[in-house]
Image 1: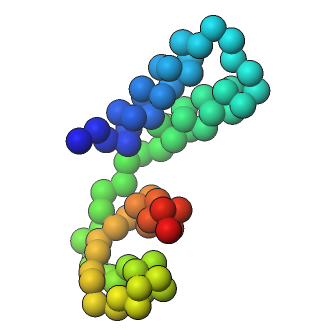
Image 2: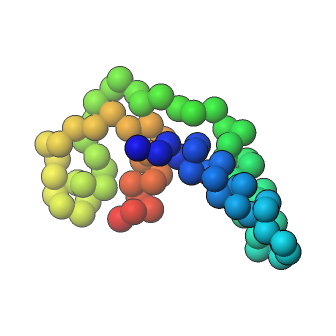
Image 3: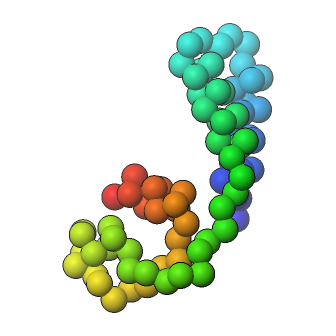
Length: 78
């Protein structure tokens, strides 16, 4: 399984290897570099119910130990 960091590095390489870079591509390059500069967060050891599973499915029993980034990703997926 490819990590988010590996995926970002591949995307950055592809964008930087383009023949022409427009404003949108430059913004993407900057965003990727900023994301790569952030330290990876380890999952918390504190289990909690998923607020999105609660809201969408009424599931108040399934527990998770996600960090802030994974919680944000989950929210975007929904």
